[in-house]
Amino acid sequence: MFQVTDYQIVGDGVTNNTAAIGKLIDQVEAAGGGTIYFPAGQYVTGTITLKSNMTLYLDAGAVLLASDIRSEYPFIDDKLIPGWDGVTKGAIITAFHAENIAVMGRGKIDGRGYNWWHKSTDGTTRDGRPRTLQFFSCENIRIDGITIVNSPMWTIHPVCCNNITVHGVTIQNPWDSPNTDGINPESCSNVHISNCHIDVGDDCITIKSGTQNDNYQRKKPCENITITNCTMVNGHGGVVIGSEMSGGVKNVVISNCVFCGTDRGIRIKTRRKRGGTVEDIRVTNIVMNEVFCPIVINGFYRCAAKPYELEELFTREKRPLAPDTPTFKNIYISNVTARGCTSAACFMMGIPESPITGVSIDNFVVDMKQGEVKPEQPAMAYGLPEMAKQGMKLYNVKDVTLKNIRVSVFDDNAVTIEDCQDVTMDSIIINSSVAGKPVISLKNVENAFISKGISANLEGEFVHQENCTGVTVR
Image 1: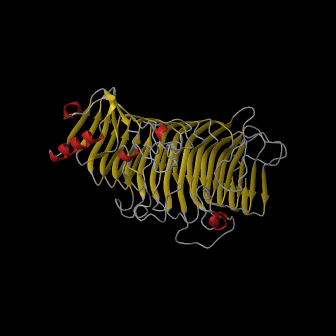
Image 2: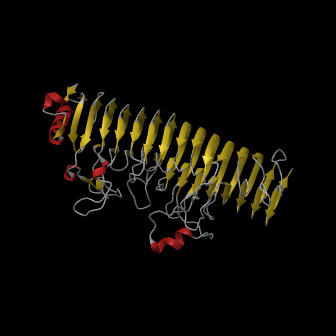
Image 3: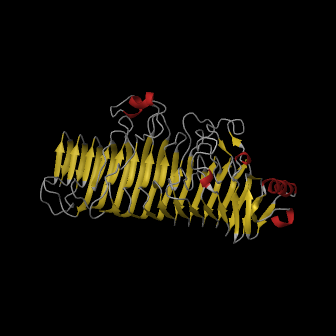
């Protein structure tokens, strides 16, 4: 145990401790490891680089205050991490190729992101902001009990790491702070996120695996991820996969979580040329409140696309398959309740040449918000209209099962399915059918089985078909 106040590290909220903490870490490394203990106090510091077999312990009342001196966050680029397609400031706490590292305790890290969120006094933009915690190619990481506030950018960001536990962590970033995601594992294996409270200005948890240009991350999938017993507030998405997913994402379980005001709930996003396969995703026991759209799978994610790529990336026409065509398959969602939704009950839009394959939604309850609502895009895609209180929308999906669905709609079909194959629906219940609107609308659908067990207060057509083959309704 190394108590920092014994090593000229001062918790007065003014003294800059960057050099002193770095010197202490060298001593701890020479001793073979140990715990660096911060008692109550406010400790100003720039980048802290942990080494193997180290625990940074923040006791109750201890606060790490991020230094506002930008030079104290050295740049990380492909010279430091060969093959990495990124240049960013070093994190407040970081590690490279280390094992058995931890950040624990009941203390707090204040990233003082307001020093970074807007243009600096020298006119530079907010790009190159440091993360709060960022680890590269590390193994056996534990982040437990701490509170993190005002992160300059992404808050917890392990990259190409293995065996990560994030437990009992509270993250609070202002709702309007730019790109302040909560927990973003990229190309990591065996990740366990539990009992966390995340309230941020962007996605709460995002699972990624790099872009096609990233030779460091895309060679390794993000896999074996469990997320459970978490609350997620504000932000653009509760749990998100992509859009950087070129290395693939697989074996993800999301359970027993509450999302409040997260724009979208479960959100998977990609586009052509991102490549990678998202597969074997299971979502169960989720409660959502005040979200635009509870479930989104978007194959036409528009952000950061270059103007000369627009036609190639976003045409709705079928294109030839390519090595960098993304794939979604085997996605199972059950026991989800969403109240106060405003845009659509569900939105899935696959890429025509690579449809979303193997989707099951069971025991899904959606109630739209009462009164007037602001129309919003359920997914961020070019040409997609804003929607208000719409039903379930599925486009370019193959092998889909909808069962035990309860949806409230106000001026729409309960379920709209277009350009899909092999569809099974059973027990679709709506509040009441809309005059002049069928309960279920099928267009360009091949092979559908709709059980007679579906019920609704019918005022109009039950199933409307247009250019469909192999449809059975009974």
